[in-house]
Length: 528
Image (cartoon, rainbow, N blue to C red):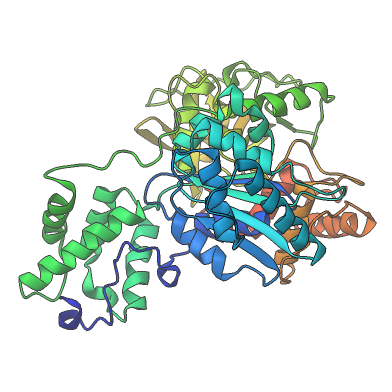
């Protein structure tokens, strides 16, 4: 209706999952990399979660366009809480497997197994993608786990990718699904867009439809973000209705007033979208497994000053093996901080685009559930600058989050309060201990070293190939051999790290930097 009025070739804000309109923010690129890694891996589960409307299905459509020719795909779009037989029948149909109208569960499994064995013998992979996986019952999720038992002596025959809303994380907390949780080799939580990304998203979709970027005023785009909180589907609903309203008023540019009215029409009067990411539970089974393995390992020092925080202990109780010397008498700060580091994690998670429920027993457990990990560092301010991540710091006796460094000014936050400090003010209050989050690779448990194998090693090879400008490998099953160790040493030299050939958390952090992963930093990317 309005396309001709604005010179558009088509409606740019359709909510259909059209890969052509996919806006690849840093977090969407990261999520797609995890999905591609899942296709390349041998067996197990890959998990992609995100709030309603954040773009999971569209990402999956984009993934399907990049699937190699030697991969068989079954895509179950809307699973239902039916029987195991009905689910298996749907999977067989998607793979093109023929079966009688009246058939048993055993016959379906046998035919699926035959299909998978034939694919394997013909050097073809089989990948099952299930969208809206939170709609599956516990029994059906367990049925899917049993399908990953179909294997040869060398490899699993079926790779399963689960796409779901945050409720899926809560389901995976259940003890009955602990075996499935332990088979998740890569997981990623897709958060909403920030303000700048929302503006870029609107401009991107207009450009695809040959629209002018000035069609929305800057203030109108900011209004869209404020109301939608960066959820792409809600952005589409508001922008589509705003274009219709602008056309109805015979105007050429969308204004904040029109955006507000459009939002009222599609969302209801004065309706505000809830905070986009609400994770109220943790995938406890996999966490217990990782924690148990971690606890049995000897204490490791990745650099002389950095130690990982064990998820089995409260974050506020974390202690250091190194006693820091007394600091000078601090200046009095003009805002109050948090009483504990655990409370400050709310602010830190917000910078990563997510949140956690107050009832969560340990924020570091939540971090692991969404593909992050906690790290404690005994570090000077110059070392924090090198790490380039927001960190929880203790200033005087209270806890703050160092959010940004800009032109020598250090910005710390505590809840809704914000304070700008000079370097001298920061260092006179800082006790030398910082806590941070970092994005870990798939199936990470400990630093990678010579002769290691597994999903994390495969992910390392993929990342190094991409950094070197090569296409990521389709095969998997790499070993951390002499050649890979030298590649790691070479990367560490370029990153200014000690070239020890061990891929510890600090090395992963620098790998993430090079790949521009969806990570918050102390320095904005345009500061240099």
